[in-house]
Length: 173
Image (cartoon, rainbow, N blue to C red; front, side, top):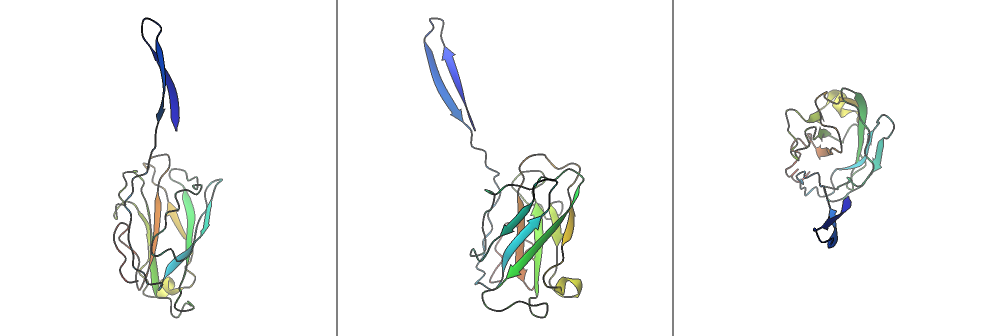
């Protein structure tokens, strides 16, 4: 965003300028050397009036989609979140996918995804309902004390267990 200003001295000599403001959300950037074994193919989050339904593919382990419209979520509201995953090496089924996923939302907008207070969902990828393929939709609740405004959500998936480190390397999965 930007705004113009004019400064004048007592002799009516004026200068006009523009101030440009570039606000970044400042979040860490994870890394991955996934070797095509697993990747997210879609993330869906239903908001009040605007939803996310973002198809993706094998972006080498990380992709930034902050350029897309954000879902509008209200404090204390509960919303359905779902992901689907794919693989370049095998056709995934409930019998072989053995993957997990995690989602984080930077509720305090400090650029750090706190694993205790900002992890909104995490699977373990080991069996039971988590072995369902595709993954079942999960409900997430926005805390009453979350900051308003643009906030980053990070979703990760990994072979064998969830991608529980939102800022680290997911390894060879």
